[in-house]
Image 1 (cartoon, rainbow, N blue to C red):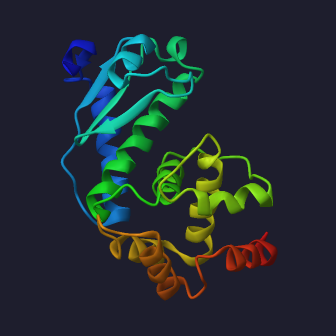
Image 2 (cartoon, rainbow, N blue to C red):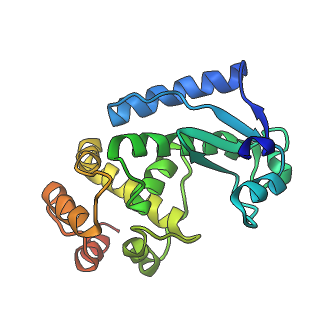
Length: 210
């Protein structure tokens, strides 16, 4: 049973509740929707995470979402059981909270680069700009991911918002549903941005703006 590994269902935690309320307002304002406030489950150790997920996890992995809730390493042992500082604990909660909004609005978790990019953007988890070749890996990240997805995804989401505004990316999200395919996503993307979701056009974008 999953509950066996959960050390604490967070209740009456003023600092966390205040942070969640502030985060909820920002995300609701951006996405234009409200979602049910998630429960936050604290995990006692990395060993517990590994048992729940049935695999050995890397030191950077510290949280995930499931069934509308957030699971994260206990803040008391966060720096010991991960390779992050305590600031990252708060950023990670915001990151995972954003995933819940993405799921609620789109009905899906794809494309992964857009989902992860928005989460990093709102959590203010700025990433070093990758090489141009690495940035083109965006087209590998519709349903798959690897350790480079965060820097690639953050770059493109930040770029789209900074250059074209909030409304267009919001329109893109609203054009999606749980049956979205990469082909349909590309068609929706072109209607909204007037350039193709393709290696050719994205390469031109990089040369023009970067």
